[in-house]
Length: 163
Ligand code: ADP
Image 1 (tube, rainbow, N blue to C red):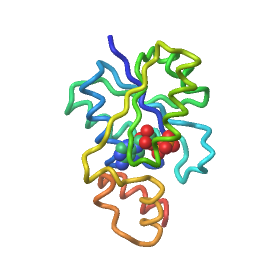
Image 2: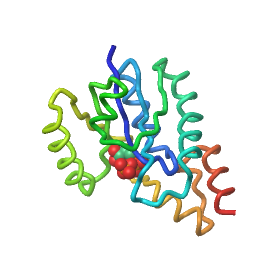
Image 3: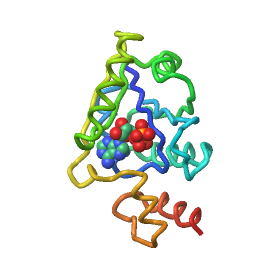
Image 4: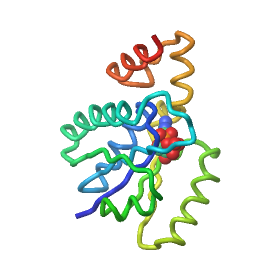
């Protein structure tokens, strides 16, 4: 059984993330969405809220793709999380060149710790590539319309959170 781990902050989950999840489902039998607990990014949503949103979106994607998708909060090393969930593959999304340098270092260091876990990079469809959770939050805070970047369910939670 091929198990993939797609880690991130998902603060909140966007249409960029769901596009990557859909693509990853074609590569694995089971996809674990690793929701980072201890993030230096100062998330807007609590871990419970982020996991709930990931689970809600993944239920739809699972029904659509036929692949089992589960959310898994983690705060240890990514490579240890991969071991914990039995993943042989780490999935990451690549947006622009700006993502590359960080990802390049991550792969190098994770590979030094365990060379049997392979990192796979996927690119979202062009219209979703520019989406970043950070910008979605800023747009929502400034009363902008985020309908093109997140699902209606996530949009509602964003608006509620912002008040
Ligand atoms: P991180 O905190 O690691 O950046 P994110 O939640 O921002 O976590 O993203 C998780 C993963 O999803 C990362 O690999 C990131 O590059 C990828 N990702 C986020 N948005 C997009 C997008 N619009 N297109 C492709 N990949 C994306």
